Length: 120
Image (cartoon, rainbow, N blue to C red; front, side):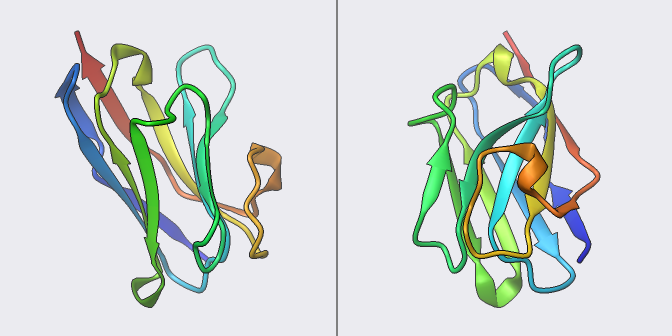
């Protein structure tokens, strides 16, 4: 399974971005992780398959929304009220399992990442 992210970019604080992750094959439980310079990769959101359960890190709860379109093999991350501390490379991830996880080590496939930069 190959994962291709899109939708990153530069936005001012308070703005919004929508990330998309298109899978070449059937990706089951999926998630979005971010990695800022000098920091470890952190799972910020995850979704089960077919999508009844979701997870959000405390840092993004109430601002980010994860969703999926299984017919299109695509997972989305709607990012609202962005803050400068959200600046990072965002990676899409997927696993060969329907159950979502909140740890990076639990994922089997990774995208190449997309840069999100939030200016103050």
